[in-house]
Image 1 (tube, rainbow, N blue to C red):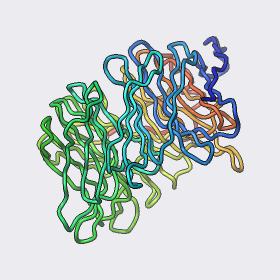
Image 2: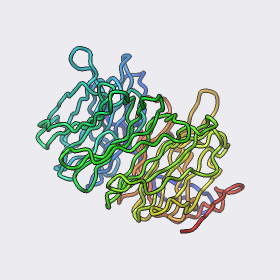
Image 3: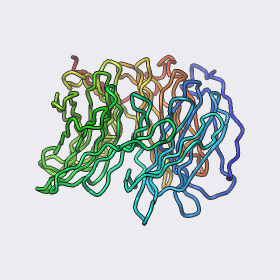
Length: 448
């Protein structure tokens, strides 16, 4: 394996107050010895000891590879593992100091399958590997959550198969395959793609998918399984015209409720971003069409739960030169608590929420012909922009996450050959909001 550790660059947070720069606490770099590769970040997790685990799609020798990267709590590169894949990849931290890498592969008879590899988090040793199928988790790297840890510690992996089934593959700590959970739609309907999976407090899980009804309408399907694998409910959101435009994002809450978000078509054939919330028994609690979207030019980029049950959603707005809205919706009613329309000038792709309520939105911006650069913007708990970084030395979309240590950001290097991890504090003074976010910043508050 052609991996080597790059020197760790440690930076002091001592910028002059006159220069509004938000500097990282440390930078870690993973470098391939051989050109040319293409690194695309997919996901990032931080363990309880502060160690960082990132997953990237790495293309080399005309194949996609799932690369699992481990950095220490101070950014030092520890190890990397990879294997060839044929579609989406995912990551999840497991109990007992283990980390799971999930990828779409080709199984027996050229049928698509799901491969799970579980590694020792400390040294990268492969503990077990299983290939299960037929099953599909997706062909495009969307950054969605494909695997979660159930309430009892089992690994749950979403998939679909045969065009009519939503599947949850299950594995215990030793890697034994447990009975699968399956939801089969009627003969006149079909499942055409999957979105995300979330674990639920009762030991079950919920999965979103894109489905096609017998009358030709396309909708976002949400299936909830209980701890025994029984289907509790199957909810369908067709939007106004029955054109799904891709599967929904999904988050869950401690009371068993679920929020989903997508951008189905309106009656006028334009995308219309919306969020809806479901009770634990499947009752539709509310549906909210998001305001201020440019008709036909909006989409849901990210969704996250707030600690108090509210919903945080990032809506990309391609008809708006500011590029996105960050909204907080009341968890009980769906009312808009605040709607931030910052002049950030980039396309969002990811969202992180810190314990103190701060929010980090990450994405990318065009920086010239054929050149893309990474961006992150931080907001306080009230939706006011705090800080942003435009000099990440990353060139493409990013993956972000929050932990007690702060924000952790994974992105590609300038030559796209390497992976870069940056750690930022998540509790610094929002001194840059007056100097950096000017001319056009607007927060629309609706109250509760």
